[in-house]
Image (cartoon, rainbow, N blue to C red; front, side):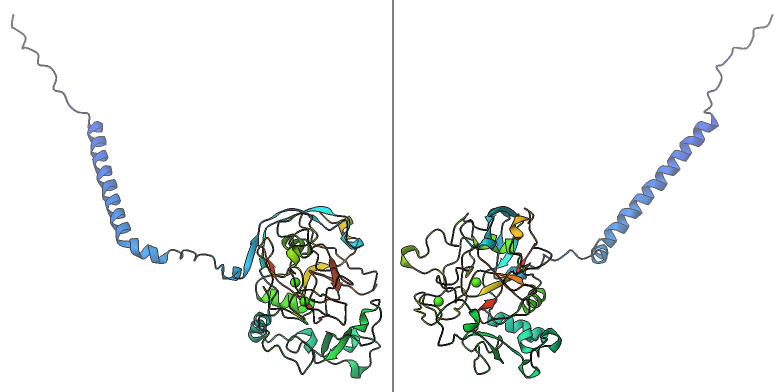
Length: 362
Ligand SMILES: [Ca+2]
Ligand SMILES: [Ca+2]
């Protein structure tokens, strides 16, 4: 009997597939590491170049148009008056969104910049179109505007034609007629601008005319339901706070407020929002059509004005709203400098006591 050779344990052999998997893992890792290193190197090398290729960061918004403007925060106020004229009623609650508004009326100096930049010719400087004035003799159709020139024989205030006269050659450069000029009146409000002229200026300035609601909200300066933009009293401490008319209109002007015609803008105290001449100096165009009973149906929020116009005193003539009164407002005749008072005129009509200011939403 021979001894069987001792048995040795079988030699352990790695399966080939495990080895193959391990090699594959090593190769993949090396490839991935190599790729990441190249990517990081590329990013580092191109960092500056990429900065140039990316769109430029937007510059800070140009807010230079807000110069001379005041931000009026939106809010709710009582528009109209229970004590005023029928078209100021009913007093009603209105909500307006915030907006920017010119601190002063637009001045001759500012309007001159607009005209110089654009070559704009105001309506008063253009020859009237005969088709717009049927029945008017051709020789009467000459450029001009309406100037305050009271006749000497006025005994009643029933007919305003007694103190308004169409003066050929009157316009914003020649407020009293061809022989007059605005020399020395650079800071006075521009006058003889009709609604179309005012809109043209506002568009050039990147602004717009205020709605009637915005205008009244701004004029009240944060005071609710007050008869004047400065409060309850007409002349607190015996002081006039606006350029209107004192004396027996239309011949006697005592100039108790210190000024006979227009005043340089900002000559009187600002209202609660820092706005000047929201009462008096010159009437100011608003965007809205005029409708005497609009308040009965106007929307509560941001009323845009009616779609149509009607003036019972002059049916057939569509009119735009004016606000704030002027240096011709006499308590005997016109309380138009109260914040709720409404005025209206044909949009092609400029007068020697009418100007405007602009607003802009954000
Ligand atoms: Ca005055
Ligand atoms: Ca004014």
